Amino acid sequence: MGINLAIPPLRALLKIKAHGTWDGHTAEAPAFRALFDREAMLSSIWYAARLEARAALDSPLGTRHAHDLQAFLERRTRLQISERAELQARLAKAGAAPATLQAPGAVNRYDGTLGLDPFLFPSRPAA
Image 1: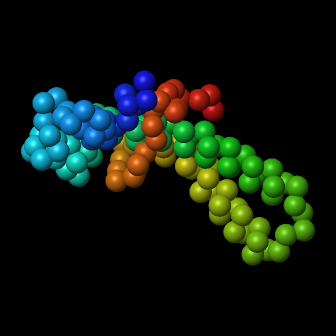
Image 2: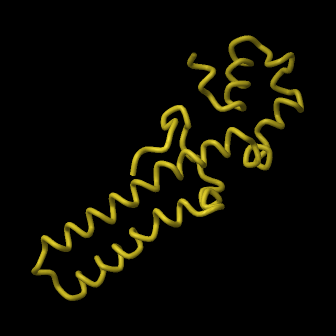
């Protein structure tokens, strides 16, 4: 099961290292090398799934951060004015993050990142 969990370019590389070929191609084959093309990776289905998994994880995390900041502000009554203002600004930003991540096209904010392996985070958690 291990090799099947790898992303397609890495899976092809592992097969070449283990068996000498991948789908009849060697490491010098243009078809193999095309798997590592930046644009091909960024437009692939497997990469989109990684970005969606990242967004699904970040949405409830932002909600939790906002809740924790709110609880901290309620507990701490002796904060300097500047400290309280900074924490309230963070709270406003953290409170807006979950809605931003659930908006259409929000996954685009993760373009160019590694995202998250959908196998590690297969479904959207309860918020």
